[in-house]
Length: 117
Image (cartoon, rainbow, N blue to C red; front, side, top):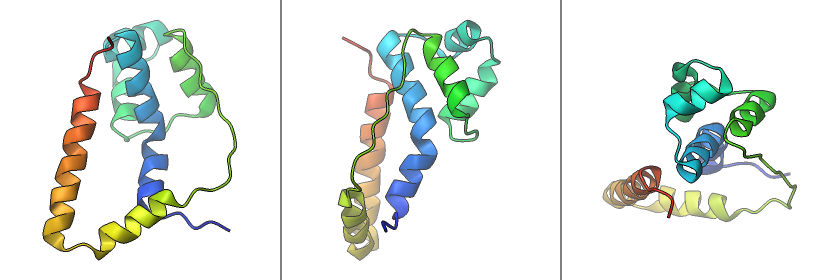
């Protein structure tokens, strides 16, 4: 049985928010426009994207349908890649972890503000 590490747990908790951000980037839609199209308050979109709210699958499907997208899922064997990275991160010095975390945050920020080509 697989035991998920901290990164895998964080990724699972941020999944819906990341999917919505990617959907908005891909379609060039703002949070307010997505909310309008889906018939939900703009605060709902913001809370999901910021990890303050976890939508049900039917709600996530509804939000994606509002921008003509759908989420497809498939089951795969467990891949421990993230768990290996977690172990490496834990073994690093505090200074190294801080540098790695800052680089990760900068990359996420760059992708969050990227515009589709």
